[in-house]
Image 1 (cartoon, rainbow, N blue to C red):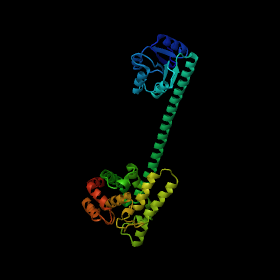
Image 2: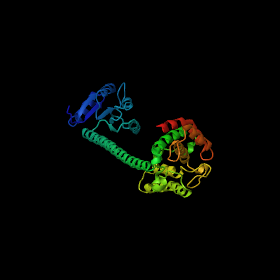
Image 3: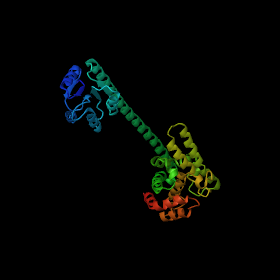
Image 4: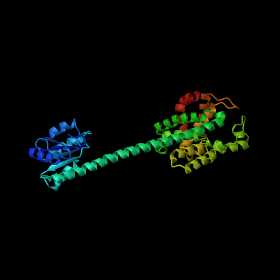
Length: 356
């Protein structure tokens, strides 16, 4: 047996046919002969050939029985099988092909023709293997490239939000905490079945990640206002309120230069809607009730909770229990009543996150 040759198994109960078949291909291929389907199947447990020439009409196990067994096992199902038969009717040929054979050669066959048919099918199999390998390599390259792009995107957004967090020093850690709060709240919402229609196409991880841009509009707020240690004047408060629309505009600009819109769609909602109120008294647009996207309603609770429990230059943070009571009191006014109820179920987890 020559190692650089393809291996062909020939199966036929007629010794003359085996001898003729092996003789026809032995100059080009390593040929192994078997006078029964049972012997072939036993050999396949130890060795996988490149192609099988299989007689249809054999005692005990005919060719159809044999190919059925070959196709049952993952180790052998991809071996190309050519049926050899004395039957020339279309029905027999169709049956063989439908069972997974790649060709149907009528006996007695012409040795040169048999060689050409084998060459053709081995070439096709070789091309299929090469194409599969190419596709696998291409997929791996795409996955690697995608991972690199995502990692770069995440690094840019994380750096940007950390810079924002440091600039808005009085709320240090706010962005990281709100991501964790949001993961708890949205997970609970999805498990509860509330707002099932609205949440049907959510990508939870992407939505949670995008919360880090909810305050990105503060980049455009003057330091004298953003970092003011005391209470804001009415005019200053009007300026700070603009961070919602500034943030939405920033995200829209990013969206113009990228094909990754899902992440940014979530981010726009968080940036623009986290100060809207259930009763319509919020800003920037005064949206009311269901006019506010569900994610924006959830973000409102998350954002307020962290503001309540956090220390400020002008106030000491409320306790967890005081903060929960304030949010509960805002049910149906500031906050979506359904989401408040979900918040109350998981408020202990919020407390753990706030405690660090």
